[in-house]
Length: 454
Image 1: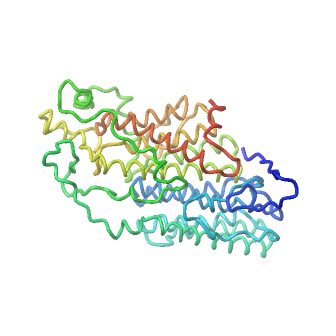
Image 2 (image 1 turned 120 degrees about the horizontal axis):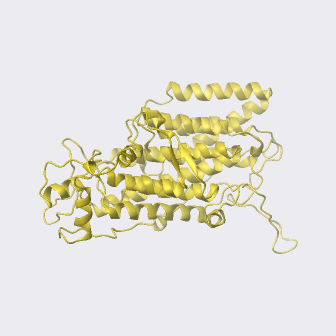
Image 3 (image 1 turned 90 degrees about the vertical axis):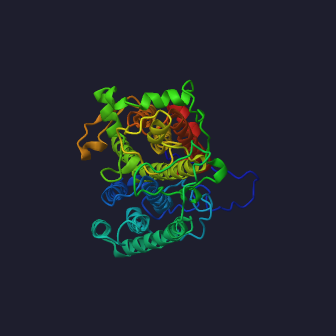
């Protein structure tokens, strides 16, 4: 990871010029390399963001957005300390004119990261809590004091703090152009009439309106809309009792009285409700944290991993929600009530207020497991993320095995059909692969690297 990339001139005597995303174009040899710092600063901001997502009850798509931009901010903060680092400027659509470190001056990369991450987290959570809440203020102040004390060089500290602030503000400005704010102000939505469309979605609980109907219009990070791996149900809707669709719905009916205790706990383990947990993308951010600690990742490696992971989760949210409102498929609760004539049936988990296909949990998990496998291979691991809600740690043979369990947990919960579970996981994996093929970071990591780690 983070190995040097040799760049040679194709024609002797030609002068090399660096594009914003070219390897090493921002490298600052006057400063201590980002590879020589530990990852505590990066993990402190990951933890804080995940905690605030939990405490402020942020839903999965907005949580993934905040995590995606935090990954961008962390990586861009330290890319000047990575010899073969590729800037994200010129690689992410519309990302341009970012402030750059002075190649002739010294910087402290953890300080840069601290001040950029503060502003980006603040913006990512702005609509869920007041700006600059004590939690964010306290962390940025604490870490600034720590770095100032360690450095004992006011010039380096102040320069780094100023650059981090400039970079953070630039990324905040970039965030404001992704259509998120527009969808907050123009969010009038009415579910299409189901007349003549018994397969279409309707809300399943009183006083609930469809959640984030316009999320699919947001700008992805590192991909364009042709690379979002959009899909249609591989098992089409049918009311025919002999159809695969009906048969799977029959399996859902009464599943909570027939599944094992392990399966019941599985449905709860991966439920990742916004009220109690870090949400599905946050759960995978925590799994990644366990891995970077186990593998002793340095600051540069950690920021690179979280950049890919955050962007992949954000893109998965956009793709999933785009398809949800295009396909507009009814939930099992409605199907079982209307087609199977079981109006009093309730799934084990509460039905979320948005269309069924595809499964968000499956999409997030497919994307995250693909990123983590590309870095750590098919390694066994134990996940302790949900100790916060009293659930014991779980051991998995691989990240893919964990993603499979997360996806099928939605069946145990009674809220997804088979196609939504299977198709979304494939879609998430496809999104991650596309991202790693297209976007180059510090090590030139690509999706093809995953094959060497299996």
